[in-house]
Image 1 (cartoon, helix red, strand yellow):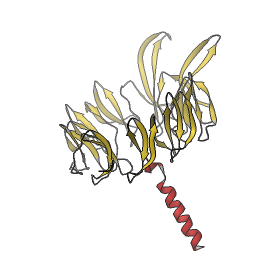
Image 2: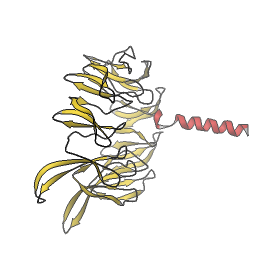
Image 3: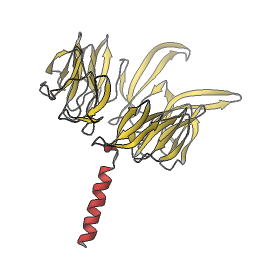
Length: 337
């Protein structure tokens, strides 16, 4: 019994090590491959292009066609699609010719090629652009939402529609006089039943993140909650979504970070700033990029020519003109020094 238990534990540990969290995209000589968290090349760079891993599979491009590889670099779905999105909730949107459909992990066509545009499934629904053939003409009916059974849950009524986040999705359509003369663009947040929970004509709407969404009014950016109440008045020249309780915002030419009350917790002092991830945020001053913590203090002594937020313990950086990965101690994991 003890032997079986030990074997089970080892199997679980091995499986945990082989999760997508342990795959980091690299580019060598123009080819894409992957390393693990220790900086070891686990998928040799041999692909024209790759996406990141989602649900154990990553998109890859061979010439002008797309397919999917597994965590070991094995081709599990051949490169035969003209376009492909990442897997999300068990399905991936793929395009053949003019039309989009959805496949599962076994490359079975779950939803036929019948949409002129499709985005990923989120919260059980996917935005798709629907149409119908009338004699010899294809009539676009706009964007609506389908479920995984390819049932139309929200009818096509929108010029554009985004994926759901925190129970709401941003949609837009043009209001017309007598169905002919454009008046203005209406932007709403709808729920899973297609009901307009928030009606607004604001521009620059983002998806909801941590209960707040960005909007733009008079060229300035503020934040609203999921009821449509403005909780941070429009006052910023630019802003990111909230992440880990803070949002990067720009006043004039300088970036800082605010909390959900709209108060600066890290003063605007940087030339550029990206969102917090895993407790750290990349910021830029002059020619150098570096990482700060949530007090605004420098968290890693080294500076970089460019850097991206941490994900799964590593961050993508550029040093001496070369792209690599560092850990939170600032040690170069790949390429090996």
